[in-house]
Length: 385
Image (cartoon, rainbow, N blue to C red; front, side, top):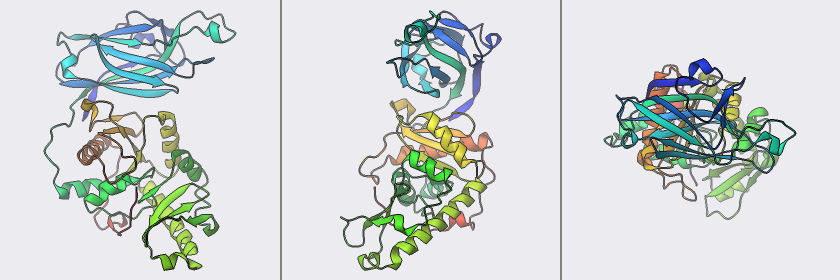
């Protein structure tokens, strides 16, 4: 669980951070401050009353020529706490464990950028500075990691999971909900769609979703178990309808009408913004795309988005960070690949609990829906990974 910010720096204004800077920094510009050289460091106060803390960095890499990404290594008091490959402007997050802190009141943060290069080497420029990253903002937050918490009662887990809704990718989160008998009606319930296709669908208000000519029953399934594929949006979902029904002329027409109805329901959920919407994806998906998605969703309502990724180390499991403007990022032990039902149960619950608490603390959500609302109605649907 993240506490309040302990320290914030705005790198567009030297006044805001000049007392913390040491070597390896240029001067503030309109968008922030560039690192200069292969290493830059800060000397900042240590949060003495927290067992550990989280470091958030809003940065943009210097790219040009053959360099399409910049590497960054973060060290605190000599110990590496983060390693990143950055190809787009984004917010990086890394944990500073208690064992790293010296408890002497201050800590040195060193940022290494081994791919730094001179603008004059890749473009028509007189700039001889060795640039790595432009820093826009740094936030240091007190953290209490949720590890070691007692098992969550099934009734509490079910109530928690009803406050979330999947936006596809795979069936993993749907299986998480099913384990606790949470069976919401939803367009992406046991369905998948890649992020770039989801963005296009939202741009088009999913106008082609109700076209039966774009639907195809996929072969290879056993009796009563087939995938349906929508050619327009690359949308795949599972059906448990009997095979005899799949061969009737009415089937695809009925399915197309049902998908249009589910899209209307989802739009209503987006307008209400009572739920936290879940995107499960690898870290190879950039924050820029997640912010584009959040922008599309917010055409309908003040949506809160939870981006779930695989933790890079044990201390990160179950942890959630707020990347700003209602975009949360949670870390589970692992993400499933071929078997969506074989998920990391405990860490999913930890992430959802932390996301719910954070959203409430930041007042991102309205009051919870009543249990009699449509969002609580359930229907049994089939599932596939």
